Image (cartoon, rainbow, N blue to C red; front, side):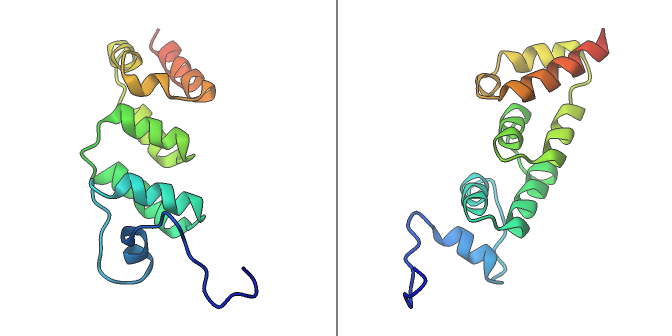
Amino acid sequence: EKNKKEIELKDVDHELLDLIYPSGKKITDANAESVLKLADRFQIKVIIDQAEQFFIHSSELDVPCKLKLSDQYRLANLQNHCVGTFKTLKDIHHFSKSPCYKELSVSAKAMLMDKWAKFK
């Protein structure tokens, strides 16, 4: 790749490129997960940060899925935001029945159990 004039980026859609190049495009619920996946793949911190802020402040995605994304992409602010929404043991119990719970890492599940223990 070093000696090539052009490098083909496979699996990159226009959504990510539109966000990198100042075009006025915004992260939306329709493109957020794919943009985050690509930004993580190419380590584009500014886009990862924008996606994290979108999930915290604007997304209609439910909390269990946001928590799964925070775990998958190591988004500490989003994870803290999601955990902060659990106000009762019932909230955590309800979340543990979610399909997204099964996809969490062991460390994320341990963090939830720690939160659960604080309610007792």
